[in-house]
Length: 95
Image (cartoon, rainbow, N blue to C red; front, side):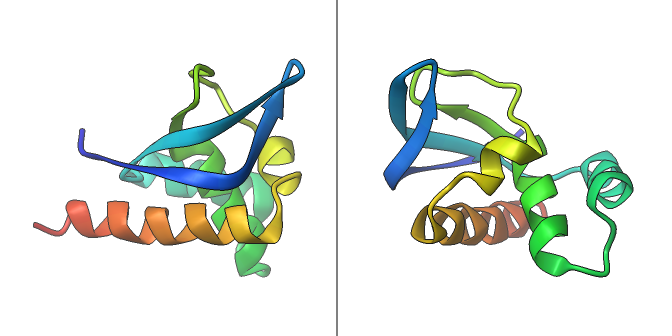
């Protein structure tokens, strides 16, 4: 499966360590259904956050799984970075 890599500015802190470099894969149909079940579709921000949680492969040395709650704790700029990466990952599957 194709992935996108990048760097967060503020990072995700897990077990006292802040992780910056990330890898995100293209979402599957299953990811979309699961995100819809968890977050609904009436709030795009929540839905996209749930999709990001499912498609984030790793951040730094942490290889997941990631949760919706972890994504909710991101700074706004890091959320935007991952959201933009998810859009790029979606394009990978269009090829």
